[in-house]
Length: 75
Length: 75
Image 1 (cartoon, each protein chain N blue to C red):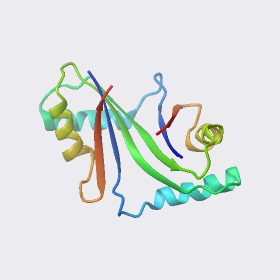
Image 2: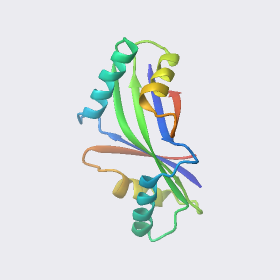
Image 3: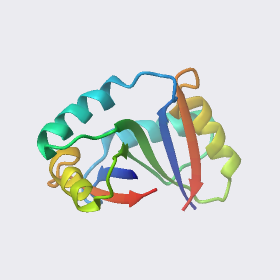
Image 4: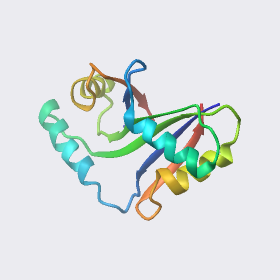
């Protein structure tokens, strides 16, 4: 099975990395961009089909639930 | 418009960060995992609908095309 986990900063949390990339992108494109948020992307391959296990992994190991949200998708 | 850009290491490229996370995950779950690859995730909001612009940004600024692949999605 193949799973995708996306971890991104919560809406209320400042994302300084995103802000910095936004500035660079605006200079490069010479155009205004509304917002950029940066997160992490994990592609996980397992032998068995166990989404609960991946949820647990995403919640406890791959993300920090004080400042980040996560999303698990089967792919 | 909202776009998602995912940047991940090319298949042939070693991913030491992924390997490290794989070990931690296996210890935590007490189970074998086939593979973990780690990439970057960008959520970009723009006023105008211009996917070509986002493609250009992904290719030239957000990824390093020697070692990384990128993917642009409208969302």
